[in-house]
Length: 168
Ligand SMILES: [Zn+2]
Image: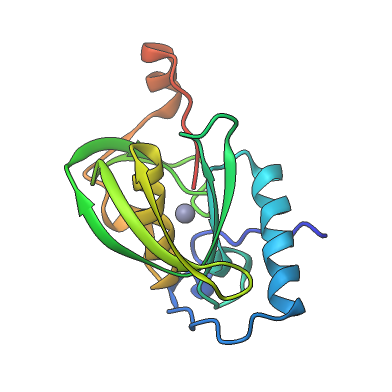
């Protein structure tokens, strides 16, 4: 496994649409393993392949609602159902140091394939629903900054309520 470099805003790879994964081979598995390691190393909660310069529809994310937290691999993911509305602070590993309020569903269901091509569905609430949306948007070349309603000073926010922002 190897750490991959996380691209930051201004890199045009982040604005491109990623292609569907067709081959569930060793090369895909290496990419996913590297993304897992890169995400673990980053302190974030989600990472999409275009963030490491690979224009394929692959995401790894932490399901923080599980005890212990579970790393989830999503190939060709699609948000198929969502409900509710939450206004929450969001950040992104590709836009370091920038946080802002966005509106996200409170619950979402995602459909995806695993690393061997088997389809499955998974539900997420709160941060996990937010993460499903944020990461699948990366695959279409969109950054959360397009959705920010109000930017926040994360240090001020942490002083106020002791919450830690986790970039995606
Ligand atoms: Zn992101």
